[in-house]
Image 1: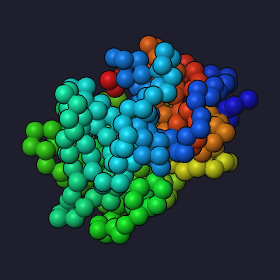
Image 2 (image 1 turned 180 degrees about the vertical axis):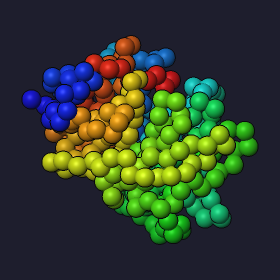
Image 3 (image 1 turned 135 degrees about the vertical axis):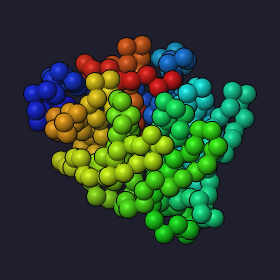
Image 4 (image 1 turned 120 degrees about the horizontal axis):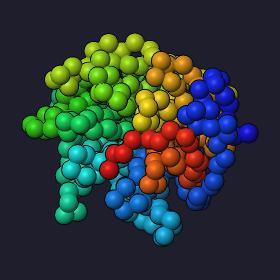
Length: 295
């Protein structure tokens, strides 16, 4: 068995088992998985290697960006442009349709951001990103002193481009995702091993922040990538693999991965293939409930 079932609903979401296929290996530390439905390619980062790669059934693994300022999380905006978080340069960028790169956020309050880590885009075009300190560590980024005295989560306004601080009381904010109706924003905290939930106001600001679920179990790894499937189940990278929670916060179970798991996304035409970035490898498995289309 490659799963730990904690609630019977797991079988309707994932299945009785989740056999893993190692798609590729030999990387340093993989992250930032994002499926491009238009090209049927998987984009993912190898941060310490300073490379963003692509994978497809036809071509296997190819280089997408090198160097890349040790980019981590990626997401497509509402125009299909790739938004990326750069650890080494502490910024959030957008690749324009002509291939040029626009810096969307690099500073706040006159200080350089810590190291933008993960990013999502709301249906109105607003960009939300987490800003822990991992990219100021050797290997995963560029070793340097932190200018901020907190680790926050930010919003980039879709019209003005203004960067606003949403919340700053995290140990290390990491993965984030909206509920299906975008009324709630879920953000996990790697230091504290839990997922928090915030109310999203009409102006894009957030309030609340109660602990929604604790991510615990056997195995190595901590809270990292966080995404929602098409039925509102939340997947979160955590100890031992990928933890799945029902919309009511019940822990359904864990897809067990043999390496520390950082991130994942759904791909293929039916969005039922779960692509998993886990340390030196890229894995995939099949689930029953499809993910949501992002590209």
